Image (cartoon, helix red, strand yellow):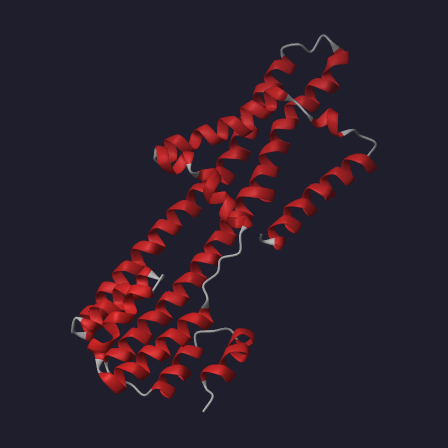
Length: 260
């Protein structure tokens, strides 16, 4: 579970509720069913226009990824690549074939299979970079749907506000209803702002961060695969792979992978 997402969303709602209480209000006074349907449900349905049915329906699963911590196992990947490198230099590339069945990483398995099959290095790079490009496109599309909900919600909120104001202006003779009607009219704007700025835009940004981190790991794997294919020295390979890690992760990994 990604505790930072929970702290962020929980903290934002806590600040909103604190503002409500300190201003003398009640959370129940901010609950309005028509405003909810206009803003929340209406903006969600707008996603069916923007994207395909599977993407719109799968929005909730996509947003759920923001509450998880992706595990890329950088240490395990580097260790495995170095083991492949040592074995390939001792026994030849064909000796790696029996090792591939145990690989859970399909991207790495695909690349190493091409190496064992004797594919040219330039072709391997092109194929793996194409695969990476398609992964990034899929991730970008999913994050884009989440971000679009954050774009549509304030717009629908403004529509709800205009609808409420029109209804209020048509009933100006009832002075006692002006205040409550204005409050309800503004409720849709509040709901839209919360959906966009507390939930959708931050989660979409987090998903893009996850994609960047995964892409970097995939680029590291491509570099390792090509180094094995070219017969590069294992120690040089280790230094090269470690350069893809952030300083904290690198420090925790390098002592083991660079040991004599």
